[in-house]
Image 1 (cartoon, rainbow, N blue to C red):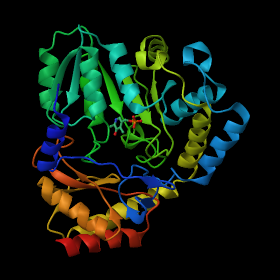
Image 2 (cartoon, rainbow, N blue to C red):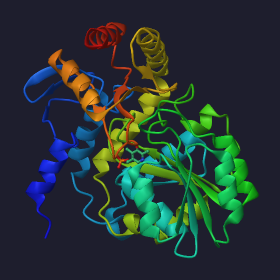
Image 3 (spheres, rainbow, N blue to C red):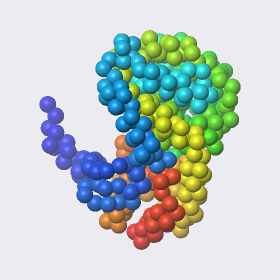
Length: 383
Ligand SMILES: *Cc1c(COP(=O)(O)O)cnc(C)c1O
């Protein structure tokens, strides 16, 4: 049996021990955590919708009408009209024929990959993929081939060499710890050339990318649905609620309804959350000013950070990582910010590669210009 106390002490020694803090009140650009108030750059609430009253009201009204629990899995009696409506709305919004709700993005990834490849298949995965895609490939028992980050030549070599029956290319559309984008048009061309699925996990792009907030496909102007394209939007980040929606061809969605184990063998999420997500979608679609404001904040942070001894990684998204290097140094900065009532997490290995510890600055439409200036000034002081 593992000596957990010793293992935890070892994590302490390496500066790798993670601790939770307790949030009180809503998520947002201002948070109360462990009894203290902070300006926060530490959530994925990119549009400032997690605490929006319209979402809470939609959930409240739905709960009053249909109760809290779905009470069964989707294939039994848990598939509610509110779920069904949201699936249609989301698929239409991202421009794909059909959609399927999962309880979380993590479960969606496990379910989709496992339903499309087995031990006779192969998954081609970017090395910087989110942990849930890594786990999805492992659980599927397919041959797990990892290509260097955004390296299309490497990916093509692996595809060319593969004799797998079924091939699936899977990657983050926006990389969660770096903020950069996958080269989707080129990936789609490779998927076509090598007869592979292309699965895009747009957890950080949905709601944020594209003038209409439709995500990575809108960003690249991909309007013609391709049957090999599978799109994942998660609803717990920019959308401010919870859950995820896989979108793709009608046949794909029918197959997932039948074969995605994390869809079939779990209770449907509370219908009131689908109602809240529908309300969120109305704001995402109807209030493009949130995205324009976010874009101004990103530009302002970049300009301000130019004077710091650390560099922002090249990113045009709300995720703006400040590369620090060492674990202790990243922790020192995060602690220094916290002393100044600013929250910004230090991201350390194994979440990111050794030697690339960083502050993951995440901007939100809920911030204003003065918030960004305050962060930059605090970092300058700590430099
Ligand atoms: C957050 C995240 C997920 C998991 O989504 P949840 O709905 O939080 O489970 C999956 N993929 C990526 C890239 C993510 O950033």
